[in-house]
Image (cartoon, rainbow, N blue to C red; front, side):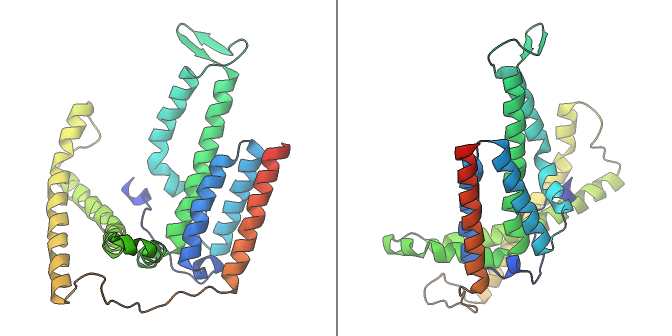
Length: 268
């Protein structure tokens, strides 16, 4: 399961998606989030899914990473889906009834639509981190939030914290995997017993993981002090982002996609 967590992972490449300006890429991802929730029929979601799949193909990212990004949240999706099936009501006769359990066709339709929407949403948002390095992504966030500096909002500090957090997510996942294997080699069992027993079995994992995380944080703080880091005042950027032809083309394609989704909502 730990190896299936792809948050913060970046896959270098030279595709048009990789070369897009990170600021525009972030803005389009936020717009995609809004569009997915605006889509109110299966045709619109189908078009959105085809759009996301085409982006994966263009970027050269294997489609298996879509399923890897979905796997960690599958338990939450399953629990939510079951609750929707049992709690949502509808008009007409139920299609299944057993005691207090009643399932309507409208509940099945709503649940299926919710699952498809979540799948498309997660797959689309995951592509942002797959094709953009954490440093470039947080730099884009800092530039987009730069007007807030005039009201003394700590933009640079926020971006730095996000950079560090996203950078160490894969590291902590790898560290957790090593601790789990080490504990299993010592005879630990994480798969048997009731819920309380399994929770207690994870204590030998949590304690060394926290110790390792605090150790890495202390080493990082010392390294930043040795390099005389003092915040964002007077700091310059090695690379200055510039909009290119690929960004204009991407914006036009996304605008066309948005228009298609809106027309689909109106006429279907």
